[in-house]
Length: 351
Image 1 (cartoon, rainbow, N blue to C red):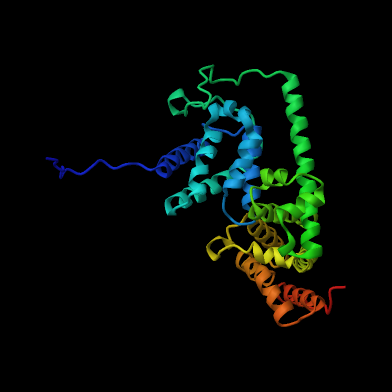
Image 2 (image 1 turned 60 degrees about the horizontal axis):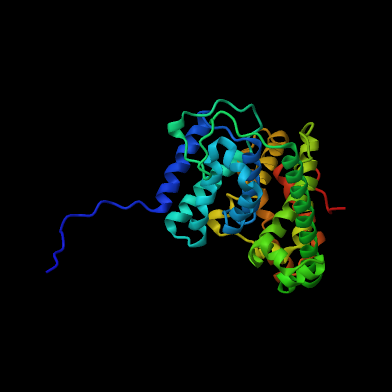
């Protein structure tokens, strides 16, 4: 005769809880300087942050790409705490639930912070009791990674350079298909054919069609920021600040007009829209320029107001549903900037 105990079972901690505990511990060590990212770890964080910029969230595809990039070398960086944590995020994203998504969101905030950290000298590692065990079961000294031959470093660098070139070639092929034929024709097979590679190569690099579109959007974002954001220095006074705001908006409108279908397909959910790295970068830049142009104004809120005009969904509504020409959208942006910055003369066109 079987009996059932009425005593409560002890709580069982989920994989998500375990990952979150380790993540918070690593974040704490990072804040207090007990853990500092190496160059490789920072590079992996940059890859994860960049891949999440289009959607505002990490994905299984981006995690696999980071693990592939880091390979076994990352296990020896800071005793492998960062790379093992990244690897343990993968099950949470392959079969996501509410707890797993919360943990992934916390992880994204962390990797974005690590990615933005300036390189600095590696300090002594934390005490052994704070360290997670190495995936490889390595028991060598914690103070330095094992030496690697110059040939391995040289070969690894060459392989990464080849992978980067192939990645760019695939994205250029995908961009051409999307631009000339539309997203409905953007398939893994079409990209492989256009780039002259096997279909398996495309699947290994991007995972699936969604991953391909996310990478394509990120490629476009990187190009846009390099041309219109990253290379822009500090404005020299009010007039130059206003001119930079004007130029930024016109460039954004023209970019969205060229790739509107892709922008709408990648439109994030409302709770992620303003957390995306590109949106935060735009707001930071516009706010800085507004402080120079209108020192007495609330630059932070006015920055959000200006960027609202550049939302892809609004531009699509105005151009496709209201049939407004691109030139009018650009001119209206210039007028809006003029009124917000209290210019005495309102420009009439974008020419």
